Image (tube, rainbow, N blue to C red):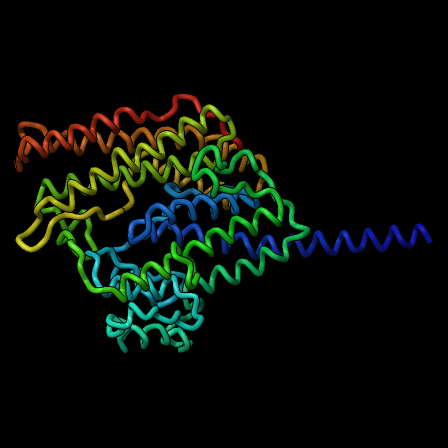
Length: 415
């Protein structure tokens, strides 16, 4: 009898292990897609919360697999200038970099839509009822047409499906806690390290509840965009171009150098976040986390602010294109990353993986140097398009800040 019970338990354990393996293989591609979603929407709309969501999605992935290569795997970097415009999650909802206007909000609402009944407007909003016009309603209902939206109608439905998968992860083993963002490092009180099915579900619920398809939640993206859409227009927006690209600025040396500097800063941020998911040493992680904050606050923000006020043409100012910034080490790193994923021989793969940390460091230093070089070129006396003294001071301050964000000289890696 005891032997029979043992055999039955063994059989159930084998079944559970197989189910966990199958479920894990199903979830990992979705988590990589989730990271792509969060990264692609950061430049387009809600930066603060999308950074939290990116970190949480990354923690979920790291707990089941390797961390995402945000810089060295170019598929993660959205190409906003592509024609036709890139879409999100195989839908036909385009992601377009442009000045804030009604058409933006319509797309944002569709992207974040839960596809539940639209919330009822409060009585004091009735005077603005015309803002919820037939065009928006038609776009909202377009999701019912399978020909209009191929796979998911919105981020909300994508995360709903992922949530159902996570709920089934009772027997899945979650690992790599030390490689994940922690509450003491990032978004205290909201960050979650994923160690089991419960914490995995909690991390995903934060993403869902804060925006990806939440109705009636004040801070949810969907609700915020809907509220903005239903209120009178009273915004002041800089006349930035639609789908800005570095190549479009080629006839304007100032605009081109600014775009290159902003691209280098964007990619410096990506490679820094990428690195955090690869190291466990707390001191080194603290250094990288400090750099992440400084790149966003002291480099990217003031540089973008300078750009949107900088004249490009008679009708348009400049705008950051958020493009891939090529570096020699970065190209080599991408090649190593791709080879490591394809290699099946364990010894050969280990050889390739061992080269990745050093190449990552080289690429990061090239990116930091790129920011400085492009901005210093603008402030050089021989630059053909001069800026005023105030502008020169602003750019020199950004250069000073960039030089104060050095890449850690020695970083312990976990492979």
